[in-house]
Image (cartoon, rainbow, N blue to C red; front, side):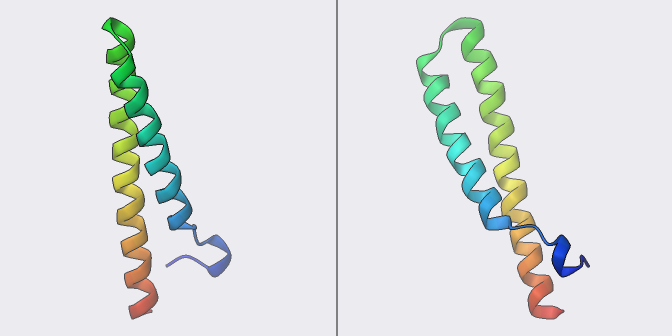
Amino acid sequence: MTKPEQKIDCSAYIVHWAQWWQITEQHMLGATGAARADANNVHEDAKRKLRESVFLAARASEEAHHG
């Protein structure tokens, strides 16, 4: 378990990656060719990080409830 001063604000990460995922989706839709492939890779990375953030938030919440 982390010390209180080391706790991560998971909700901020979730908001950040959700916004980044939406931005990259817009770029992906407007791109063609190689630029579209690059945008898709960034979009998938953002989606993965969003999922990780949600997982971390759930785990932190569970730890807080079960101490």
